[in-house]
Length: 455
Image (cartoon, rainbow, N blue to C red; front, side, top):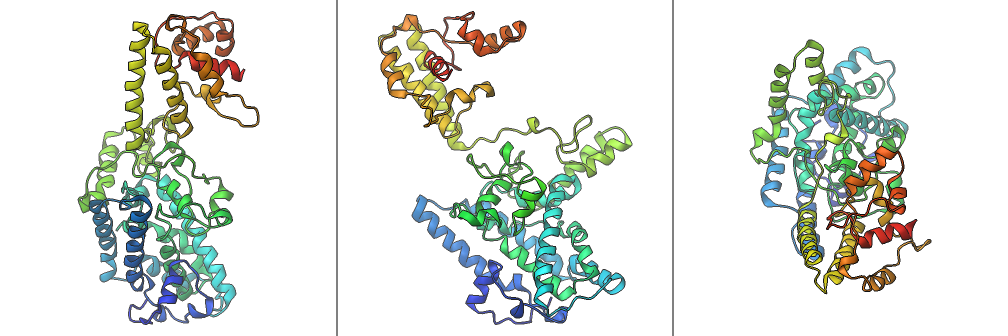
């Protein structure tokens, strides 16, 4: 790529190249020397779009889209990742040219639209598999984790790139060198990277039918999440169809919490880039056995002796946002207060407990609380077609119960007895074999009524 080639990119062309909306006839070149450095030319558009995102976030949310320290760390990582290119041509191009000059099978015409579109698909397909392996192979994750270390999700996060990543990514593009000219490959390698800039934002919600075909901010938010449902999902660069085909697609549903499953808690650029290499080195020498040491390097980041290749999903820490954490603390305080009212048999105990149950349902509805036992989830779902949950009726009927008549259920004991008798816990509840009169922070009398009404 030639930094001096075609420096006069128009505003229209600059905006279009950020979204891969360019035509073959304006981005096809015979030689590699003619190919512009599109990434360098995109710098003004990076800055402009980040300022636009900041303004929109202020208007819509009344606050910036991230934190200044995090944004500066991302920008510094982006600069860090570009430093090797000052001294030598990218290894992604060097290896590609070597294979093209020595092992190519055929030479597709550089000026053909068919070659252009085939390369678009080939580079995007290669990126999918590189990206997937960068999450599933520990030594490759050592480079890619830099990009995921931000706990914000905005356009500056897109600039948080690894200096190590290019030393493995070239492997997945190499087959294209058997028939695709280097000049065509160099164009799409840049556009594939530029396209992924704009999807790092929270100010764009759902894009309707486009969500079925292309990678969008919604899809990529899932990829950057450390929620359990987000791990190892949505590897696409431009086309989300690869994830749909290979079974790694996941739609955005509950609130995404961003960053690494084990946050690094630092803005120091060398630690951001290399801390996982230090972890691999330490783990390698602490792990006994040759094959186990080999697995430390080439299996997943979560692997350990006796575990599956990618580790155990249940060992991934549950990701909880600050808002969710605050709401849970408030709910615990409300629950403990309600328990005190019940034990004191205060006249307003029924009112407070009813309110607590309503708060539980609201928090559950918006994903801030989950049942202690996952199988209980169905009891709290609201289905408009069956009208299984009648809140007004339940609230009104609850006033007729005196505090001393409220019966609550200790789920752990029910589970133990249900296992011993080999019968479902709901059946046990209906038979009223368990009737513990104690305050419980897991399931109140009103929630039992909801279970019975559901049944």
